[in-house]
Length: 118
Length: 113
Image 1 (spheres, rainbow over the protein chains, first blue to last red):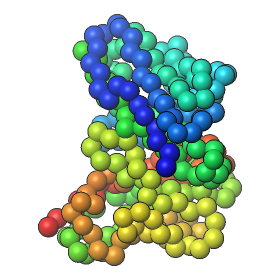
Image 2 (image 1 turned 135 degrees about the vertical axis):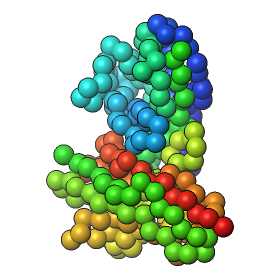
Image 3 (image 1 turned 180 degrees about the vertical axis):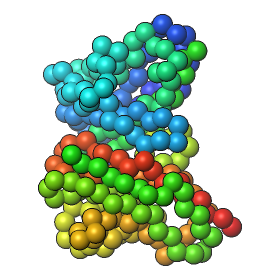
């Protein structure tokens, strides 16, 4: 089966610092990965689509200079929260689709990263 | 634009009873529908999907869902609930293969013993 690994699972940082979250597809190559944000007791909001070798596509209202996405290889996408503030505290989840399972296959999700900015 | 509605924030059932978690959707083309489950502080686990074919889809852990085109619904069901089914359930839709999923707000299922 397809596995998506996300690291770290939890991170606490001080306001003004930057935090990098990694998302890896462990047994397949993902040309596209998706980053979601989940607020407490709320749904997942799509933040951006990460495309290998090109710029990410951000959803409306998501600051691309705040949430930097890099997809430098077919198995790794990173989300960097720059100059983090307490309002950036949230649960961030990445996902990817295994192209070997067909275009209608489900997305596979990482276990998420709980970011707390103090 | 695509959207998903889960009208219930919480569903409570007794162990052994059947459960239903409701979902309705709106897409401009053919819908690709999914159900996921989330346990606390974890990512999402895939349960089942509807792409085409039989309206009744069977998935993991004894769950099934019925696609109803006229009612634009895709309700999740299970004949006999387990306490371990207690979790947060998300319905999701996409209208094109390979694109991101759009999620409903989620329904918390609580199964009491």
